[in-house]
Image (cartoon, rainbow, N blue to C red; front, side, top):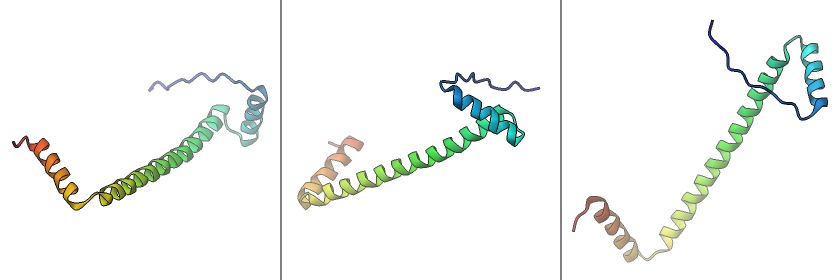
Length: 92
């Protein structure tokens, strides 16, 4: 039999512990199963929120970068590109 990971839970709120026990009993599942289901739902929801936050931040940075690039004169853009090219390929 494969060993299962153990995560000790220290309750800070006795009422929440009692409510968990009551809800699990009424559902006919163990407290562990109820807690695992709740954690799974919460992690999925928060993961989706974090993913959306990161996507929005990346989009905003891309927008600001484009605005900054577009605000430079064309000659400055060309010289910037030339510097990048030269630094990557070590052409002197």
